[in-house]
Length: 230
Ligand SMILES: C[S@@+](CC[C@H](N)C(=O)[O-])C[C@H]1O[C@@H](n2cnc3c(N)ncnc32)[C@H](O)[C@@H]1O
Image (cartoon, rainbow, N blue to C red):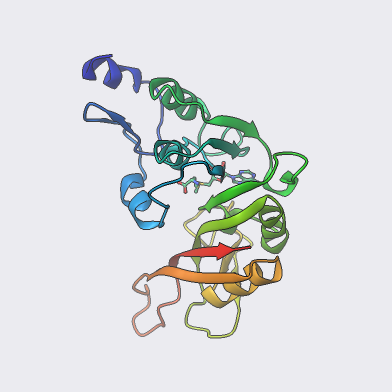
């Protein structure tokens, strides 16, 4: 395909991810995906590894894992792919076709993840999903059950000014005017939950806190990345 043909093939889809399709063509997503890929600490060489990308949406992180040599990559989603969510599966399917990718897809709810439903993977990506979970500890139990070695988790955080494990609860649209956001745990709560569900070692590798909207208020909200090992 020429660059113009590639670009034309991205049209008619509302993209979330910016996926590098080669020849200078990037899908016109609203997310700053390439910067996020650089930030999450994805191993450069995934040769021989199996990777599960939970909440994959357009699949940018799945395709990146494949590009880095993963032997098998499975992308899982439900909310967006099933049509209930903010997006569709069209971007994932189009990108997979344009990249001639072998990434597998499974429509599974986070709470239905288990060794029986999807198998067990060396590396699990759980990016941008935890705060959408009504039952975050239960969700992490399911995530841990399908993780053999390492988890990379990216989440919205809140209550970061509190040292003890704590979380903000959003019963309505308090976070970003989005009713699908339920919990903003603080870093200590994320670390504690990951330990409780069976990760032996947990590192907070990145934390970013926003300026508070009220002058003088503590910096409490932002996002953070964690690496955890079984
Ligand atoms: C904010 S997006 C993050 C997408 C991608 N992981 C990233 O970091 O760019 C949240 C994703 O989680 C998915 N999701 C939300 N709730 C889910 C659930 N209960 N089961 C499976 N996927 C879910 C959504 O469909 C969406 O693709």
